[in-house]
Image (cartoon, rainbow, N blue to C red; front, side, top):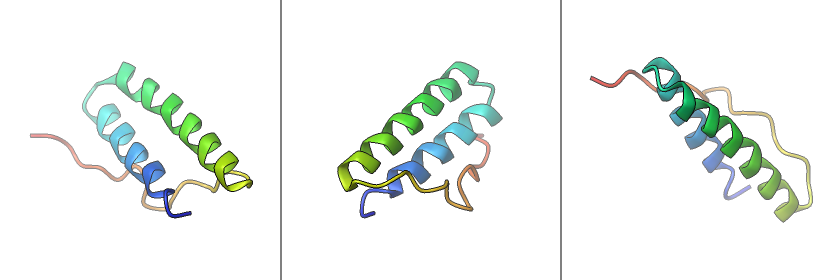
Length: 62
């Protein structure tokens, strides 16, 4: 649980990428999120948690 914050960070990065037209980056972040969730789950011996409610709330870059 202590490292689950990384899933929120990846979700925010993915949302930023999508909002700014970085579709390939967003796809790679999808993969990274799945990999991180699996690694965290195997490390803790549990199933991955659902994404955080605020995940994907990154704003636009100016």
